[in-house]
Length: 173
Image (cartoon, rainbow, N blue to C red; front, side):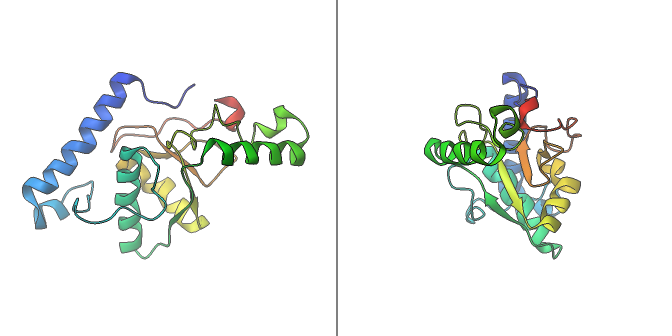
């Protein structure tokens, strides 16, 4: 699986996000606003659709969404966390639509393989918002991961570093 962060990189990502959040708490106000990684005050609510997500993904997405909205870009989570039952229903629908497990895996994965079920993926709408997130999301560690899904993003890099190369589709995980 090329996308999940290694344990060491995951700890580093958590430390980076925590350090940025701590900077906001320590400095607040103008100093926080000047950060290259704008962090909302922790007393504010998370973005809609972040329920059930990995806390670091929820925080990263919330920060990115607020920045997008401040720039006048519409953006929201169209699909985030999915229960195993929801993902199973999507898998079965995909099998009916695409005919074979091989073709279905290009578009939807079974529950035991889906990053939505583990709370580690978000699907973004509308297309303008997803394009903005693709161009700016690495500031928070958010990256588009599949060539065939302009809407699918995961927390796969350290904030401020380049996103890894995308793979053609979910079947190539």
